[in-house]
Length: 101
Image (tube, rainbow, N blue to C red; front, top):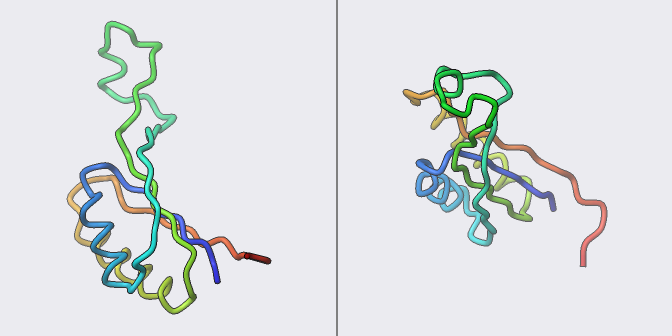
């Protein structure tokens, strides 16, 4: 068993949920988060409050699942990201679990 963690911009929330379903990962948790990039953007430079950082509304998904489901999910995410027209790919990481109850 491993922990898979996925992040995406809020616009892809339904897509990510569908990818989890296609990978046979039916039990998962989600959380709304603010995503930040350290590079200055045109929006921030032109803001009245230029020293204020703005975040992107994003989503965090995580699930404890088996290796074969994670392999399927990663393949689906790679395919999804190749067809993007934005610079906001879905990102995923896997964390091994030593013990669980």
